[in-house]
Amino acid sequence: MSEYEIVNKVARSGLVVLEIDDFVSDDEIVPIDIKDQLWEGIALKEKEFRKYVKTHDWNQYKDKSVAVFCSSDAIIPSWAYMLLSTKLGPKASEIYFDTPESAEKYRIQKAIENFDVSPYQDSRLIIKGCGKKTVHFSAYGKLTEKLLPVAKTIMFGEPCSTVPVYKKPKS
Image 1: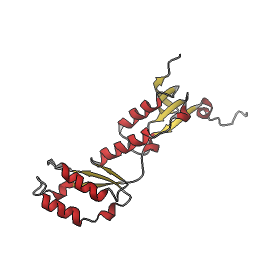
Image 2: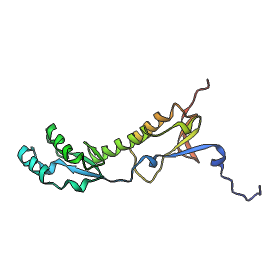
Image 3: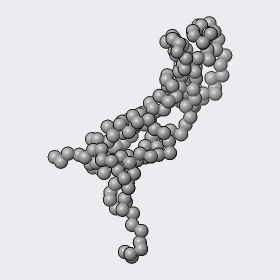
Image 4: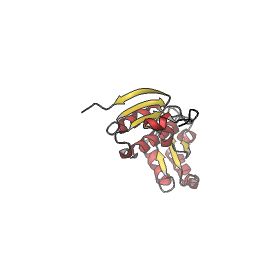
């Protein structure tokens, strides 16, 4: 090795970097805000709501992720969500009955639940902290929880500056 050769110390260290961004889908979550269907901004009238459900163009949600919610402080009867399900179910790829922000959180948690951790058995892991996407803090907790049974160590941050989170006890 020459004295000027660049050495990747991270690669040599055996550290494995996991990008939290890898659990974030690039697919948009399309919002449906029920507040737009409220009578005088306070109540949902069944007859008018049924007309909306019947005449709305549901094809625009084909193969899309949809978040159904109400941004107004109104009580929405459960049957309203059920009616929306009858139209969205055959079209949308995913339906969340919550805000788009909460839907994104659920989507990430689902991706983490489905994540195969077996390749990381006895690995020294770094969960990268600064990605390109904003990720809810719960994703870090869920990913750590998922990795605990297999990881030798778990750290947070960047390879050049990590915060130790977990070290497997010696048996």
